[in-house]
Length: 571
Image: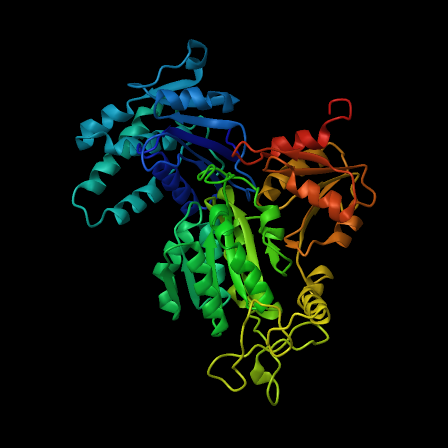
């Protein structure tokens, strides 16, 4: 019987082509009209160590990467040892016959594949082993290999013989699994009526930045944010923008602040260790009221931590990190598609409210590949900062206005000269230390964010509007929560989710309204101490059921379902 979706997991040693195999399958599925979503995990070392790539593809839109694996592909023995327990009850196994030994009880649903042997026979080395594996997968799920053949031909068009060898390996793998042909056939997607694209969270952020009017990007490579710098290095110059790689994260943000001072829309991207280095400059940007955007692709911590694993443990740092108190905005996109729109929002908030804005993603979302509805660029709004050109006469840079927003001078333009100091200052920017001035300036700087606390910010919700069981989370866990809620509501359970996209300033009133009739508030998050749960207790004053974990892996829909349906006695 054909399936609506299938979960495929490829596992092996870094350097065996596991990640490239997953990318090929994902791209081919997208070209074939399927919805897809992926999750990958890999070692921090350049070569060596276990890695895994999971792709879920299907006829309908997919919100999470899935839990129970339908098809497990083992490149080596360690892959089997690490991942066999993820198999679903009728999951099928493909394994390299030369390097993997599996228990007798699993062999009834397993198929040995001569991955390395066939690769050497065809190409003279084991380099095409991954293409044999991809071919075997296609055979099992009855997948048309035409999109893969097109990808391979295009990729190796400049290398004589390489494309032919890879195509031969692909066909050999498909033939190898002939006796399992169609055992997990996917229902073919219906005709596509909308414009779709396949992209990662990082790619969506980079594209959103360009759409929002990014002029200047400075960064330093750091996993898992590096490919934002790489993508913009290749693409931003075509729009008239500038991308530079700086010597470190401090120089990157300092450069961005300088570019913004000169009038550019400017941004940088980093991960937790880099955000730590940027902390003093974040406070400076807030005090000097200079717009800038910082993308923080969270990874496991603390310190160097787990560079290639996912975690949501920078929340408190993003909200509060730094000495003293300076305003900032923190946005947490909920999906690959939302990465685009959240980045547009980030630039608009930075420009209008003249503050630094942190876009908080994580490794799981940053590297996640997903088929999404192509962003409608006609719906993108570009907000601009208030400048001294908008007022007559000499402008007070830090004028105490009704909404806290004062005209920003631009060097070289009329009224453009001013001192952007981090020292406390009066309305003209002159150093001033009296209690009255410090209180007035703090009130001014924080007042600017009032609109985001009172309805201007967009948030996500799903399920019942006044639920008995309320789920509150942030960021990349939203897709799994959505599917978990569907499973629970199918059993008649009253449940809904509220996901603040703007976490700073925190939407206290919205959370209170949403949880007003709830008997239980469940908070799933990927960190050790339950940082969002703490925020809810402190800011909203409600009792919550914290479900934090820090295993470096995302939640599944089944995880969320179990949280929702657990009884008081079981907790």
